Image (cartoon, rainbow, N blue to C red; front, side, top):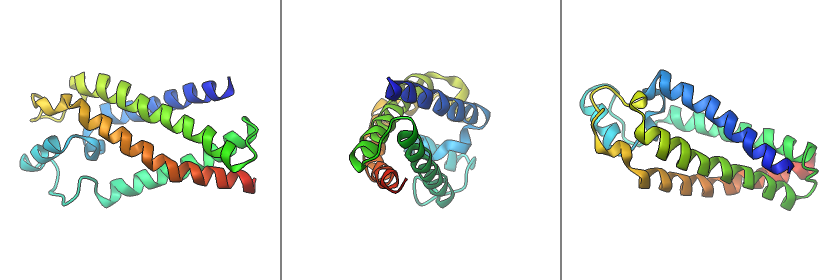
Length: 161
């Protein structure tokens, strides 16, 4: 039951962080948009040209978020779930990670992002790539894989705690 509550709280917090940012300024998360939209934004000179999908600054934000996740969830699964072994720490945190990652892909991305006109960049509003569900599913698969080492670190921290 504790794990279910943590998953619900995690999705609520994730939503509370991501949606306001996307609504206020879709360009803040442009690195998470399908490549064709990013390319169009570059062509329209809305954003500067980039060699990679994510800039160094965007990658750093994701790394910082991952580090915060590791620290926060090591504490949470240790304190509230009673995780005191690597396996318990890893499994508890990875379940939460997967729930949030797939919630992001299926609810935030495939339902909200793909259909909300409010997160569309001016000049790209009618691009069919906004409804590229496969792009978001692939992103969640990558995110699920990234979660493995992150949650392994949670497992290690649980042992230390």
